[in-house]
Image (cartoon, rainbow, N blue to C red):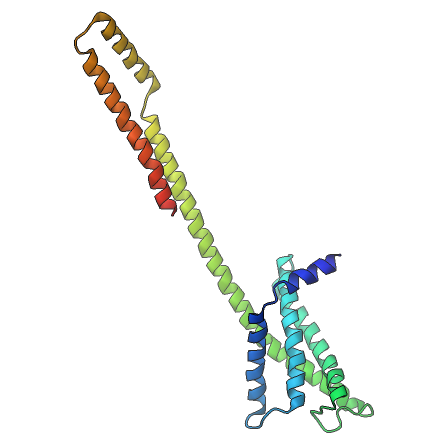
Amino acid sequence: MWRTFFIRAALAELTWGKVIAMHGLLLLWTEYRFIPNWPPPAAWLVNEVVAVNLLFAILFAREAVKRGLRPMIAFPAALLCAAILSGILQWYVRRPFHLELMVADLDPGTGHRKYGHMVVVGLDTILYGTCVMLVYASRLRELACVQLARDAELRRTQMERELNRSKLAAVQMQLDPEQFIDELRQLRYLYRSGASDAERQLDRLVGELRTRTRHAQVAPIISIGAGQ
């Protein structure tokens, strides 16, 4: 079951963009190797086998890294497996179509050519795969740096929100409960004694409360604007 989940998770990362990119790089590599001549059909078939194996090797190595395996172990191991499979499979894929890369290299009687060519294709896969995996690792590192920058920006925004909440709490703490109760007692005493300035003291207290309430309403607006 673990293997099934692992394979499904790795194949879930397979996209047409990755397939096209892999075959595009393979096309340039094949053309470069056979310049100034046109590559033979057998070369295209061999390189297709190499491309498929390398693509799956990268996906499986990436999934292994996500599950905790060190990249310096996952990618070289995947590349070695891709090289072995490419070297072996290319011969059995070419044989039904009678596509030769070397003279009589499909003849079962010429074992030294058969296995020698498997080794050559395997080494070629390692060389090509190393270049591809270096490019892929560089891209992953770039994406990781972008993610770190986004996380840092998110933390900065959260810190600004916490700071604004602290400012709001400070504004709310400007209202001293004991002082407010004392002022209410004084107002009650003024009204009971019939003092002429009771109304003026009440208006002053209401005005102060309105001012502090207005500051308390503005602070959350500032916090929301900073978060955006």
